[in-house]
Length: 615
Image 1 (cartoon, one colour):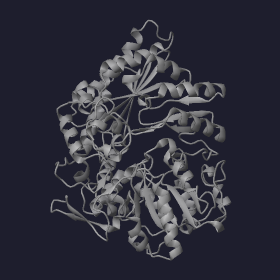
Image 2: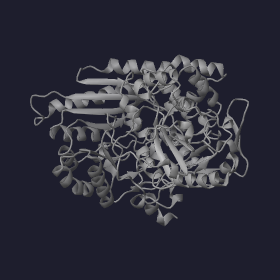
Image 3: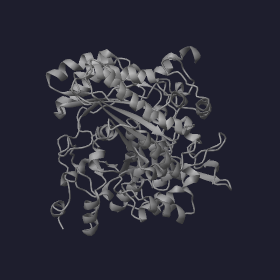
Image 4: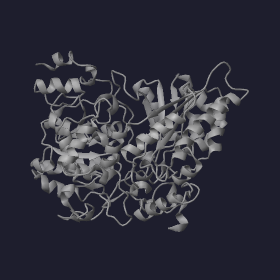
């Protein structure tokens, strides 16, 4: 059956046709290395991911390489592909996945692990690395989740740890060399393992204690005992796309994106991104402005977002906005400033924000009481929250979204009630203001995620609340909401449990993931697909208890599955931060005082500048 006939039977056929503006087309007869960049989620999600946009552009810079995009097909398309024996294919050429030299997955989220297996299977690729004997294809993976690569160790040949702009090209160049030499797969992998930031799981064995904890990791075949992540030291001179592929259909974030810095100064103890992207490195406002303007000109987007973990912490934000606002206003380009901090949201910033966005404002107190906010090192007070909401309301806003987490270490039911109380105080504040928007009611949205302990955070040692406890807390929060002015959205408890298991799992979970995939699990991050019972069946059949991974507190001297990975933040520092959490003692942010996390070892970033006298 022709692909065109199948596309008439599925929703959103534009997901599968390619040919978009900005797509890179090359003559494959003149190409030495073909790279399939796979995003193990839907087209709409993958096309919104900045990391994929950057690396797609990077991998297409050499004239001897061609990088193409591959996305996980939606359920209806997969059914037609399997029915008609159509393998998973790349959008640029339409060639099947097995035609490529390198298959690269970016992994932003643990709940896409089964989709990685599904994509390989749809592409006719053996799932386990040990079953792929030849040099082609090599399966690599990068992204945030690779800071603990062990749950996928059986399926991936090479993990790219840290930032990939330079490392991706180095791996491709090394592959090109060995392809020309006619080397076998293991010869290539041995040399690849020598690259900084490369982890080849085949060269490491895990030994376990009788209680299921890890006894030791053993490196072999000359592989390093510890693998250090890669970072980009100079964002101003790092490759950044001057063009994006512009989709035919609406995607999750359909706009131009300008990254302004990497890392975060704050040190919230639950936030993995705040630690794995250290040290903090800023892009100059001149470079950021020029890149943003060129992107908008080349893509035609009329919306631009400034991207970082905490946009209002960018030291040159006012200068950057001063550069951007004249041309964005002239060209009628909407400018978005996500990730604003409550404690540095000023009247001046509100005026700039108000001129470029009309939607409600979003802030993240994270916890409902000051004691718990101190425990998680949020460094935000109730006064900060109320002052910020006052500025917003007096500036004409009538809706505010507040992000919280539930199940945080040391949390009590009083802290849960504090979420409802804080939201009610925001509502009351609105109606107490004489110069509030007249004739309009207030809307306060409370979004409450379940806490998930993640590797390389101070809370990596903490237990997640069990299923029943989370359900009880969710019910209690709903009871505490007394007005329709406040709406509450809560996360699926089963999804949060499995995510916690996969986040802190060891390589014994490879069999669980495989079993879950065999049972039909895929798109596990989507509520309509997630099947908690099938995951529990997979654990039971593999003789493993999910509570061992999710609901068990780790001792500080326990060997963790990711202890052979070095992201630049020391385990000693994380232990100390966890102890401070139990005392509800805060740590100043990186610009105020160096906390000695260890990221100065990279020799770059604001911490390096602040700590020169300590080095």
